[in-house]
View 1 (cartoon, rainbow, N blue to C red):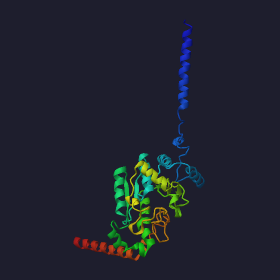
View 2 (cartoon, one colour):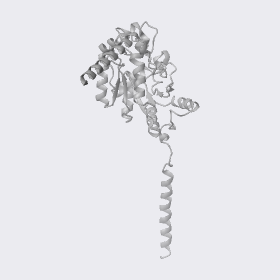
View 3 (cartoon, rainbow, N blue to C red):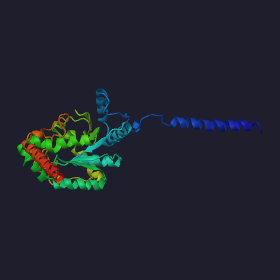
View 4 (tube, rainbow, N blue to C red):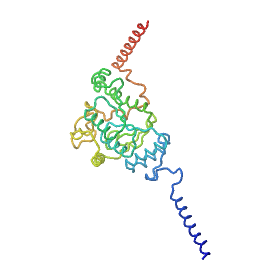
Length: 321
């Protein structure tokens, strides 16, 4: 009887030892990245990786669904301290991304470039989205203008006709460049897709810019049908002009209704040799050298402001005397 006690103790000790061993085997090793649950995607610093690794990651992301791309990006940003924002004009693609990111608790700032020439329905959607998603929306407007009237006073009437390139720069390029600088952006997310055609038909999910920032286009491989399938399935808010014959909505003066079978961006700049607003085609390394200073109307405005400031300063100086 007494000889069986040590044997039982040995069995118990062996049993607990095996449990402890199994528990240690089941635990992930220290330092292993979270990527094991995301199809083996490695967490990388998108800003500093070399071109070879960048291209390899682009190739890898082709087979990954947008929600998983955004979760992966969130993990990369947290691991490497990357400053991420979403740029959107509140079109269907941007709304899908906003919905996915909010559900993933990837609540980075949303940047909206307000050209001051948007449809009322677009501005209504901006406010609706703020309420629905409780996201911070950073609104960037043209320099020295907060209303359409102020824009006209600053840059002249119908600048989009008299100088289209200057209009693009003033309403899209310069405010975008200013946002990237002010928000110290490393990575910006866009809703561009290959199926939109034009200069987007070879779009990659990851892009390097000449300013050193990285663009991420998580919906690059989704088509029009997949975007709307998500919108209807998840009840995502969208611009109601899209129910009235529009397929892509930009500025009032450059957006037209199209036939049901028309390509997605056919209604933008209809009849003109243009398919982009300049935000994604302009060289941001040159953006600091503003052509606005060479524009006669803005130069006159700047001179007028300087004269007004000088007059005020002289008046204050005389009062002090």
